[in-house]
Image 1 (cartoon, rainbow, N blue to C red):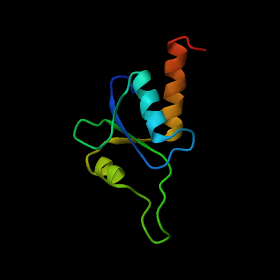
Image 2 (image 1 turned 30 degrees about the vertical axis):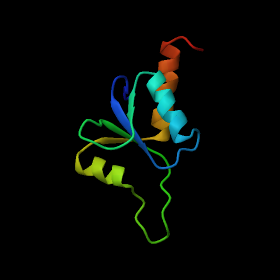
Image 3 (image 1 turned 135 degrees about the horizontal axis):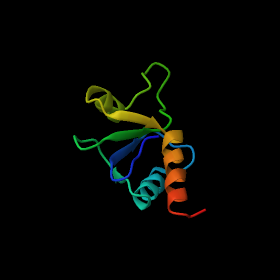
Image 4 (image 1 turned 135 degrees about the vertical axis):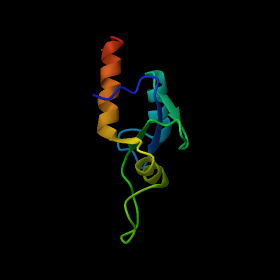
Length: 93
């Protein structure tokens, strides 16, 4: 499993389980380093659902940057699994 602890991350797309702000706050509380924009320090992009019109490619600027710069792209489920693992490590459950 990917460890986001002390890793700069950025969110893109619409998350199903949380708002972007809630996801950023949760990530920060659990030890990740959420950012609001892409830069060379970002190690992971957390991608939610991408909503585009019928004839547009399902992507975002953040995803295109990640693909070009070999930044790992995770989905919302991967992020939530990491959150649960961190909460278990903190003995919250």
